[in-house]
Length: 344
Image (cartoon, helix red, strand yellow):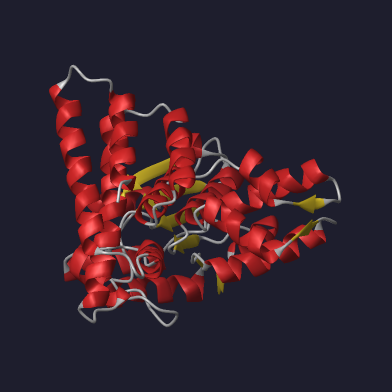
């Protein structure tokens, strides 16, 4: 039938549900949201049979799709994270046969958020791996496929400016880029924030200060802001990020691990650039599923020294060891570690 985006899906489900849906792409929140939209039309998770795509019982699935619903309009089966590349050839054939025979009363929903359907490929011309593409191609002809890709900051800024203008408000492009970064380039979060901000300014201008006051950065975004500020010796920005992270009241060893991972991303990008490697090389060698974090690390590690990054990682390692040993104030130790990382 069609390959749609999120907007196209909203229009499609207003009319009549298809018998098969497949949702995938690097914009994980958008994938989850589109899946929820279809399940909500059917009646919610309470009337849905959810199956783990990593451990599918194909004989059970063949039986499930034949059921006639007693108390709902549709017999809905939701399959999460089915990777065709990991199936035996006989299992792939059986799944394709099952999908081809979905009866009228059944809606079969696939989504992918837990593995890289592109097999490490990046760039605008990337395609799902061969076996997954067979399933997607069939569903695209006979059902609905939604490919939901994350856009870069520049693309999102253009969209944000247009959407804000449509709601009768204004935002400068550089401020739109800040909003995209605060939302970690997740389109669903960005739309929610646009609606909130436009309601607040009521036809006025969305400023940098309004975004800083009203948009809570995603954890990964705040951690990245801290990493970037430390490496560029921007003390005020680093302390501001520390305050934001402490306000989340997370388990400190877990937070420190996330921060360490952010510095490791920078270290890999910096080392790769010095050795003539590309974003694609780093993604392949270290198993990154999505390109956004790697591309960002390549951009912002420009001019950074491996020595400074190694020093920061060493300080983080020692701090984590102290935290696990007990008898320390985790918050104070965290703050002292950041100050030590900012010392030249």
